[in-house]
Length: 87
Image 1 (cartoon, helix red, strand yellow):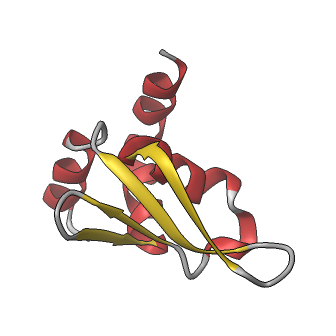
Image 2: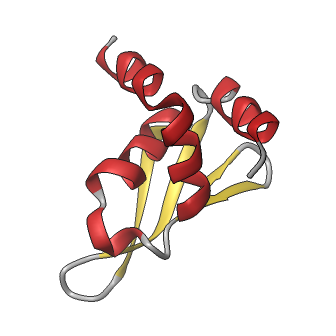
């Protein structure tokens, strides 16, 4: 993911998002809804741990981010995403 693409994703951080591909303890593929894109990126990057390598974040009409995309956005904008989550 190029820097300009990461900036575009960050600018859309308030959009609703869905996370799929998170492995639960019983091996099921959980879907997580009700988060903003920024919150979803934070979750995948910080809280999902090793079960997140297959994660995908869906947002907008047909946009998706892979686990590595989330890590890229987090690397550049993690502090701002955390500040948004606290407010």
